[in-house]
Length: 205
Image 1 (cartoon, helix red, strand yellow):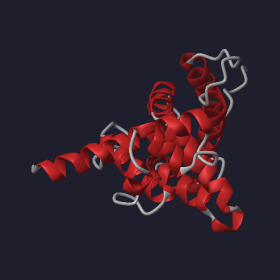
Image 2 (tube, rainbow, N blue to C red; image 1 turned 180 degrees about the horizontal axis):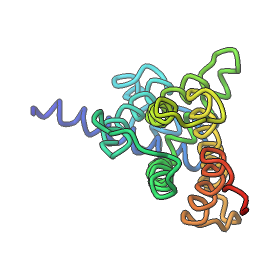
Image 3 (cartoon, helix red, strand yellow; image 1 turned 180 degrees about the vertical axis):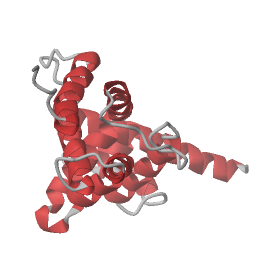
Image 4 (cartoon, rainbow, N blue to C red; image 1 turned 135 degrees about the horizontal axis):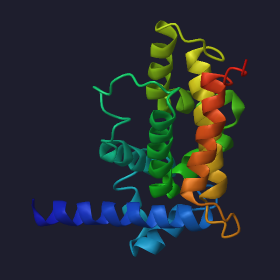
């Protein structure tokens, strides 16, 4: 890599790191491009050498996130799992929760971006459908094997994802008063969703 390319890569990385910092501290909507460049120690004009807008920068961060998310929920050969099994459901929720926790600035930015676009843009729904594809596939497998679901697999998966993402936005945005541990959140969600998927236990004779 030549010196010019190395410097360009360094600047791009600095802008991304600064954006993550600013999104976490200020929120996406309150962060200006000048906030990002100042935090990165770069001239404002350098931003446009790499990104056309703040939204473009966010999409680049999201692409980086997808590139790193080679976990069990993102692999193409991820086998169908029985989400009515407590341990399997718990594992899936834990992976999703930890992914959001470890990438809080991006999660906050995507949520605020979608809200700012307004309901007619449909961004929140499209993102829910995209982000809950693996859950939907598991639910479709359950239905194909004769299990009765609360509703259509796409809608049920989106409802699960919506509950998880909204809770993550509320609890992982830096509020020191939430007092909720990861284990408590994941265990609570597991019990709540397991009852909806598996149904209540049979009454004793």
